[in-house]
Image 1 (cartoon, rainbow, N blue to C red):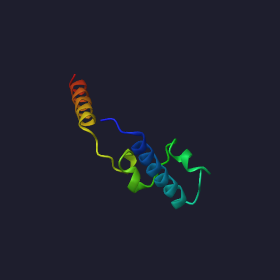
Image 2: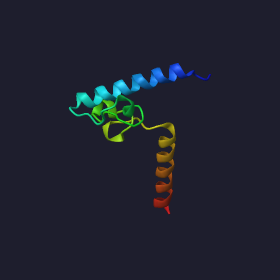
Image 3: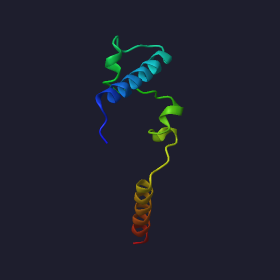
Length: 82
């Protein structure tokens, strides 16, 4: 489903306002123009927000990561037996 221009602008506007609020919450503003916030990545790096992406704050490993770790353990066990 392709969105029309009005919807894309509205979503972009909401994202820019959210990013501006995050910057103001931390006590700084990066850009003078609100449009510039919609063009760049600005995110909060506190432990609560970073939990989704940063393994330092307890990211749950994906199934692929679990399989990779298990295969590495099996390889290590087979290597140590030899």
